[in-house]
Length: 118
Image (cartoon, rainbow, N blue to C red):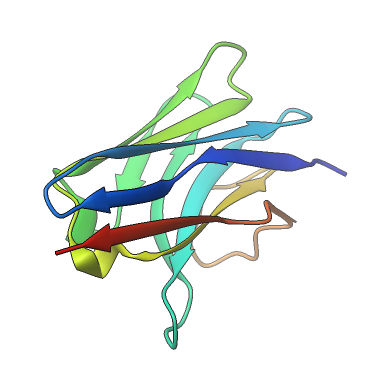
């Protein structure tokens, strides 16, 4: 069982920046960030595999950057040019074998809140 611990988040003004970090207790092939806004379905935001291949939801491309650091068990999401629509609870997720959005990620963090005010 891999445990994921998220840090970061908080509040920012529109146009500002925030960073989220997630550390896994074990090796994982894929680490990703999802988010869920109040009253909306959870959606994938960004994902990155061990070699460093990254993919983003269209609405965050050019504004968010995902990276894996050090021993590859830490993933960082740098968010810039934030918009009120980015307000959500952000969840770190991990999968041991694949980075496909269509699969069920077996490991999840508890979530961290991001609030962007206009």
